[in-house]
Length: 457
Image 1 (cartoon, one colour):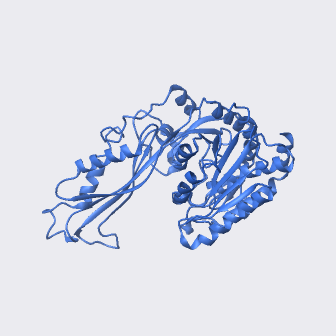
Image 2 (cartoon, one colour; image 1 turned 30 degrees about the vertical axis):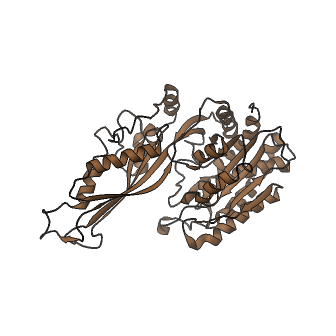
Image 3 (spheres, helix red, strand yellow; image 1 turned 180 degrees about the horizontal axis):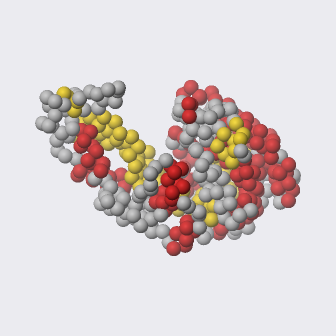
């Protein structure tokens, strides 16, 4: 292990330069114009794997390529782990809010600024760099490793979902490792043992056949925008809870151990409110802000549309109104069951003077792995060794739906060992990645395989 760690230390500048190269590809999967850039990014990461002697295949799909690379030789006596990452990134707009161009990496104050730096190019490249250190120092890898790197995570991983059941044998593993999430701080790294799931839904209210003059017709019919606002307001009670019958029936309560772990994370509500740019925090009564945003279910309105939005005034009763909604779910809530309950309640709240319709969005299962299990504890030891600070266990408020697909198709649990910091701005302007987190993440990845190899499989 000493040779591996020394190699990583000696090659820090080159690994940073490699990341800069990777970040220059504008691999935005949501925009058709960037399709050639996605292919270039896929070939770049595939070439990096080939240079290290990994058995690498770039699989074509109806969308963007999927790269699969395996360490050689495969030793059947050793456990096998799959490392997942994605080379696609979020759209960088609005450009005017970036301090520097999003695809021209800028290093400042120990951070590298660029779209995709923490989400997710820097994080999965750290794992590949750790494998490089083993290979270049002729240090035997304690585990067989398979890298699975796709280009559609930011748009739903449609073709990876098709790829998984067809290639079960190719991807067979004892567990999955993902670094596509965060840690509280460099001094408090963590293992994420739970993710929230999601249900997305668009609801539309239709009233008159056309926009109507509000002076001539107003008061004689229901205003669809007002009706929608009243319906949505009925989905939350005064305690900040989702007011839908049966919504909380399957929620697993936080244990004392979990709440104690969360309480160890330094948190100042006033500073957090300033960071968010709000006067004060709010949410479900009886829980801390950290618990609300990571371990409790939520209801959010993501967008509202109705009526005239142009300059000045236009006095109308709009013909229709719509809202995009998401509900974050926690273990053991079932997306299909929650979606059915939501629709029933929305219909119950809808007045007979308008018509309601739905467009279903994406869904994702919540995820939970025992934080006290042998794999989780092995990861905690590796994180502690890599970052030089005692690792905590945490929950993540976001969703990584592919985790549930790995469990379903590969029968494998996932370890979420993130490196991103709370202020790294994934999906926002001025996304960044701490170079210290990048360096310590490589060390953590090097330790991880030795720790996981100690588990009886």
